[in-house]
Image (cartoon, rainbow, N blue to C red; front, side):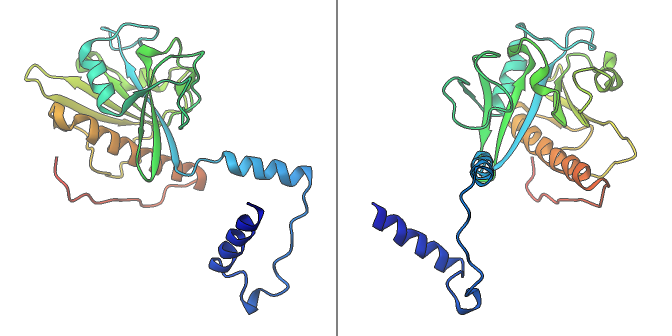
Length: 239
């Protein structure tokens, strides 16, 4: 009811300290203009949590081309699904990272109390446009010997990419992880994911997701500040 809304508004203003003596004459009604309403609508569209997108790119047997529009093997899809869970873009109300039902009918999503993440699996996409502005991507590569990170850094659809997390299956059933950065002079060590790690299947998805998240935040921090300051986070939990 109107009375309840007024009461709740007064309670909120009281909690914010706007009803104290120091605020007298400083709190004034907003002018309801088109510009104000537009700004309010924009504010309402801002996600409550941090929103991040990543690519989960599958390479073909040459290790140089990204597979899109189908294909993929069971190992790749099991890894992609370990990063989150499947949602339908047509009915999902959370973050979609530029994806909609006209592009794909499935997406891999993850959320916690702090952030929302959308993992764009290239094998489920007709093209790479949804990952054009992703700063960090996971790369599934069957043969590390033939892999050259410079090829993907130069890809016309991946020019925003600042770091690659390359996962390669091993004959032992474990997974070799390599980390490549566009600027190799920036070698700040950020756990829990380190270059050269070998991980089991049970922890691969969680460690890669957390590591990519830390890399994204660091790269985004560098971009918005136009310089890289020392950024380090310690992790006490063991894989």
